[in-house]
Every structure is written in structure tokens, then in C-alpha cells.
Length: 284
Image (cartoon, rainbow, N blue to C red; front, side, top):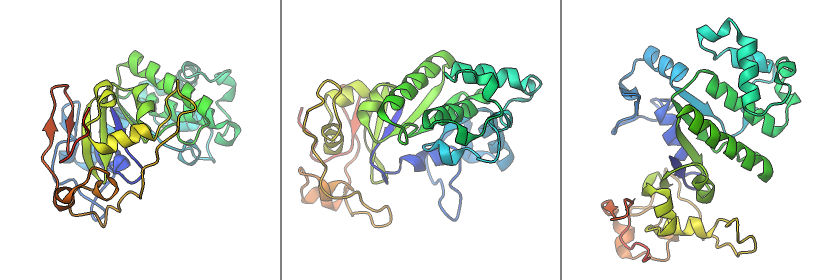
């Protein structure tokens, strides 16, 4: 599943909530259920949550340069998260894992430090750390943002391959809905801390109902139309501390009416399996 939206929309907050990284007094989970293999993480003790994070959830950060510790070798950083049964043959297990992620001569690089790897290779090491614990859930928080376009494509293809081979439930966080289509079957579009549209990604992209989803598509490049003119979304995302009274997108929306500024509508389901929250949806 893809979680899509601009910076500040609340995407990373959702990921942090799943991993219960948001705690009082910074924030609190007040409603809803966060279930990982049938376990509601909201009800876990700290010890139980550590076990869930240690064995069930793998996390790929946005910037591998800051995520990897510059003072420790790649071997030691991956070995730290290996299950006990794999630590007996740690070098072999780590080498095989790195090779499966496309790192050449992996056995000779176990003693290297993060600064000795390129940006793309650092991200592969970060993916190795996420996979070493053999998780059932993989959370990737904009894992290609800090990489060049060619490297981005390689990482996306790698993630798709891993998802299929390991049957991983994947939450892919991105600001680019067209990139999300390469990896995910379902999409949730967020704006101003709320879900504005969701559903099968092909259906949402073919006929978006929410003006913000339409604007995201217009602001991204189609692979087969490299010379197309992009349409910028006017204005700026709202601060989550000073949200508008009604729909958070209303100050930037061409379809907005007085009703939009006064309150949020109920979520509406469509015959195509999508859902949206809008008073004046886009007409297909």
C-alpha cells in the first residue's frame, strides 16, 4: 500500500504511529486500531512492542546517510539486528543478504564503513538492515528521495522484487503518486493530516475524485510524456497546528465553496472501490 501526499501531510506520522514512536507528551494514539499480525500495538507493553519491532517490522529510512552509524562497520550494524539463530554464521548470512540486494563482492565489504559506499549502496545496506530480522511488514519512508533518478528506479525495482519474493506487507510512503503505482496496488492520499482519497491505485489514478489527488497527478511527470507542462498547486500546505476550519485543502482548491470552508463531509464510497472526502468531487 502507498501513502501519498506532500511534505507535512502526516505520512511519516502514520508510520511512526504504527511503530509507536509517537508518545506523550509529543502525541498520542486516541482512536483506531494498529494491528500487526493480529497484535494491536496500542495495547502492547514496552517490552512487547520492542519484540514486535525486533521481529515483525522492518523500516527503511528516507536518508541512509543519517540512518547508518559512521563509526561502525556494515557487518556490525547488520549483525546487531540478526535473529539469534543467524548470528552463529553472521558473515555468511550477511554476505548472502547483501549479494541478494545487488552489492558486488559483498564478502570483501563487510568491514567497510558507510562513507565508503555510494548513496545507492548505502540505501541497499539500509534495506539489508530492515530485512535481516525477517519481518512480515516493511515500512519504506520515501526511500528514494536522496538518490538520483537512475538509482531510484533500481531501488524501486529491488523493493518490488523483495516484496514479491518474501510476501512482505509493504507500506510505501512517497510524495509521487506515479512512483507509487510501480510498487503498490492500493493507495491512500493524505492532506493536512486526513485521508482525502483511497482505493485501488489504478482506479484512483484513472479517475480521481478528490481535487487534491487530481492536482498531484497533474504535478507529476508521465514517463511517456517527458515534455509535458507540469501544473503547480498554488499556495502552501497548512500547518498541522493551525488547520483551516473545514477541508484542509479548501484554501488551495479551485472547486472550493463556502461549504468547504465550514466543515468536512463524510467519506463517500464509489462503485469502483474508491473512497473520497470532498463536497465537490472531480467529475470524471
